[in-house]
Image 1 (cartoon, rainbow, N blue to C red):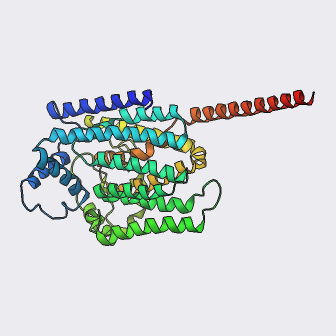
Image 2: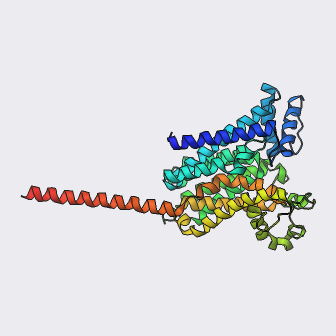
Length: 397
């Protein structure tokens, strides 16, 4: 392992471990105190009953996460610190996966190390590892899916498309909305050509069959869709039902942004999309001092989005990067539909980070380094040609 990434991983682990110690012994972190406490309590309750409940929650992605905790408790007793420590290790592994994916995508170790540092120190990514929430396993499996996607798309290693779908399926186990990864992938297959060439019909059919087959299995088995009513058909009704509930607290979206009138509210979708990615800055929703931390988080997404926009040509030229961007945008759209306050938006958009971070490279430095690399290769080729000419002259004499 490269020494530089080794340093990044040590810092990432210690940062997360410090946050865990703070959470366990001193005070609650911003994402703590609600869902994590419920997950931990349910895991212990399920450990102590012969027939665990089989309600909608137990069959959802949250239920999957709780069952893992229950299995852990059945082996070691009620040890929430151990559960959290495992999440810290998984989050540190995610940092490495993001580094590896960046290196595979751009073939530049300097930029990969830079993104590794970004992932190691990204506040929300680190903080989520110190509380008992399902974001960490989603980050881990999604980062593995990104690596497999790049190996399939960039290096034409077709077996990796199966691994990509497998890792995405594991993400869906923890949260239904991750089905959007497959939807974005399917869109990308038909929008992007590899190396300027049209994909063969066989390739299109193969990938379409995998994606469509996966979606059908999800729909008819209810795999990961209990939160959406158990199938795609009932998803819209479930969404409207959840929107009907008032959002408590000062972080809730304004009333006019909520979708409660069916198709006539379709004009609100772009606004909710922007709010999901950039609130509480865009739109500005700061109402008290505790909301100020959201400015830092939103600011990072604004900077990443601006970088993508400025360097859209470079991203589009790198077909693998373009595909990852399409998947990221699709996933953000699906999440934006079900979020009604910026506190939840901050946590849910963190799920996109394994995708977004690999695109957050320093494009100016990347282009300069690639230019210099090409120049060195040209000089070597020129020198080799001159040597061949000299040898030919010597032979002729």
